[in-house]
Image 1 (cartoon, rainbow, N blue to C red):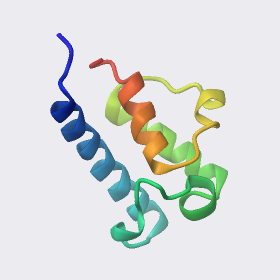
Image 2: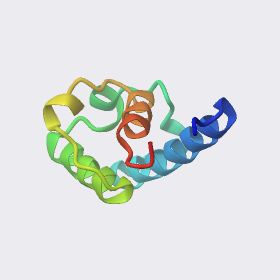
Image 3: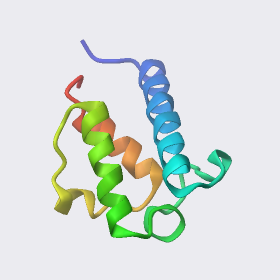
Image 4: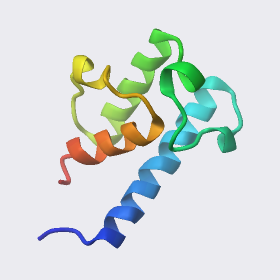
Length: 91
């Protein structure tokens, strides 16, 4: 049964809120500074070790393995949210 747009929007929001909280804690920045269009590499997670840590947290939270080559193409927080939605076992 396909999800309607409202349900997807709610799920996107939940994923986004979890992700921005996780990035905020890791980088010790204000949660308000983590936006959907924030650049991962330039603004939020410039260190490759921190990126690997974030990927591990995503895998643990959402229950799927991430191909690092595929994840390397991700540019923004919004891209991460979309990636999680596309790869989550619930879909």
